[in-house]
Amino acid sequence: MTNVLLTDEQVRYLRRSESEDRAAMKLPRVAVLIPCYNEVATIGNVVRDFRAALPGASVFVYDNNSSDDTRGAALAAGAIVRTERHQGKGNVVRRMFSDVEADVYVMVDGDDTYDASAAPALIQHLLDESLDMVNGRRITEEVSAYRSGHRLGNRMLTGLVCWFFGEQFKDMLSGFRVFSRRFVKSFPALSQGFEIETELTVHALNLRMPVGEVDTVYRSRPEGSVSKLNTYRDGIRILKTIMILVKEEMPLQFFSCVGAVLGLISLALGIPVVDEFLQTGLVPRLPTAVLAVSIMILGFLSFASGLILDTVSLGRRELKRLQYLQVALVDVEESGQERAAVAQVATAA
Image (cartoon, rainbow, N blue to C red; front, side, top):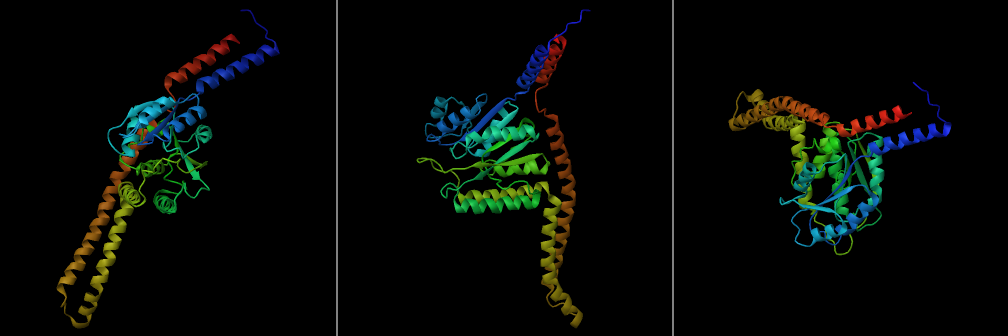
């Protein structure tokens, strides 16, 4: 076998080529997902901005039965446009996560209030830290961009979720997020409307996924664009979703609290009856005594239900965790190609 001596310049060239080949092979497939409804005034700018910020990404716009020309504006801007007939943002997200195949997913609202130039930084943070979700925390100095009612409601709802599931986010309701493939393909997506952001957050926190949050500029809607979010109606729906998720994911704590409340009511009703019996030997308020005992029994039943459902919830969480771990971060075929390319470079050297 003949030994081939390489000059220092040739060695540096081969190493540089190998490094470039590795970087090319590891370049993730990025998909930008934009759910929208009646956003003809803004969707074109959003698509163009994200195509400029992420030149190699595929931009998908999912139209949710818009009555205006949102679909045409998105097509003209260069997006891949699809339609989801079931009304509601949650339904659109479920469809997007099911249909689109990628390694990294960027989800953003189609109202042109988020800064597309921040997307590469969010993706880089996701990849560098091996995270499953990076949340774009909204930062703005424009009063009109973030109404006081929305700001207060966001703080209250985010604080409530942090109290139950852990403090990882400051802006739970942001519509600008980056996900790993592992997150997207293991997310059940049961919500129908704007409560989908709450479900996304709780899913990550409940499975203790590695997550992060990056400050992003948030601006007011352009003129001619109207918000679809109703402060009170959607706020109540989000609060209801939080309570349902607490009941389903933390049944022991939930039903223990219910049992404690019932126990306190029972004691408040029963102590005067017992005190009167100790003093007189009589129970003149028999209906009150029966009611107090019945409520106490319900309290114990609530606690017992929590114990049983906690076991069920643990099994569900284990299954979701296993499903999450079964999803590969990158395609096996791509990893095989990378190994073959490295082996070829090594053989040539």
